[in-house]
Length: 428
Ligand code: GDP
Ligand code: IMO
Ligand code: MG
Image 1 (cartoon, rainbow, N blue to C red):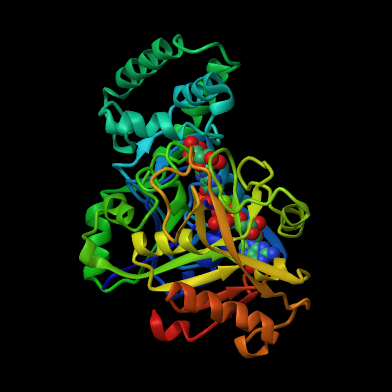
Image 2 (cartoon, rainbow, N blue to C red):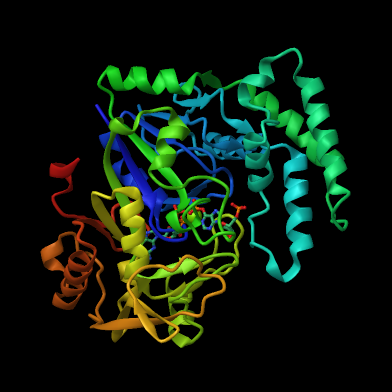
């Protein structure tokens, strides 16, 4: 058996949660492989809405196991809040949620450092979610981090104090920020008890044994490929590998074990936080997309920046991820638009380019656009591709032709059922 992958091809918030939740009942295990509570994955079904940050989006499907893999960074406080919400929704998780022992812990002082470092950057700030992601991955690669498995060591308290003291020393390098460390530490220590009550596993053995046993596994990405630490719009990125390669390190599986790679793109594009965004719209169309698409962050509530879909950007992330099928979400948001646009290349210093330049931050880019007719009709009640308005079909066919990957799912609304599938079963 192989591991199928679902991940975002833009700057995050492509609708990963919805698609994972939809597909989850075709799998035995859903596993998160990177990121942490900077993620906000929204699921809507039976008239209810849930936002998950650390827990995989398969948790609402009965009988399915959900693994928080070793590539994820875990804040016990956020995790324990998410678990409370599951309990309130009558979702049992004790037997179905597993945590990899090698996953790193986000300490209160990691969040404190995140806040202090962002504040010190002033206008240059990344626009971090301030969940402590950067400092935690820094401690991981710097070989100072604490992992879930360490919680069970008799030396844990000593190691915690040592790391905390080191952080407090570092914080002195930055201008002061408000942070109630004592209160946060108290919450953290309480939440650690909840984390310790969960089932922990050696994730790499677990996942490979499950593969051997013929179980179907879906890896759920967080963020998007343009936020990847290596290939994103550095330094305006997150601190993990958000691309397919991250599945191997984040779960402990070999590259040969990767199966289908399902890449998700919105029918337009958004970004939240700082950093370059070549097709961003600062006009009425951008405002329309934000309003119509309810483009406000699921984790921070910040308004998302909106713009047209960017084909060279998507070709780049399709290449990096080895995408085998595409999902286009939020097509309904375009229902009222008379004309749609897609960037086909960039003008840089008077020359046309169809590839992303080395640096998007300090390069002046003028996108070239191709225009498409809008369908100007509601997609309500449409469940099959053939029922879509002709102009919507043309838009999808054009994207497919440009990107050279089959579009197997088209999402027409936030609810689980609002999805058009095109021979997807045959591919999975
Ligand atoms: P994720 O981080 O990739 O899981 O995406 P988010 O949950 O942060 O953001 C996607 C938002 O779009 C959520 O509010 C979803 O409920 C919503 N959504 C997902 N698919 C669709 C769609 O096809 N149409 C509309 N209108 N909203 C959608
Ligand atoms: P999901 O999984 C959108 C962005 C932040 C910031 C940058 C670095 O819901 O798609 P970090 O907190 O990681 O230090 O922030 O990355 N960012 C996201 N943007 N969706 C996300 O996750 C994001 N996670 C981080 O806004 O610009
Ligand atoms: Mg999100």
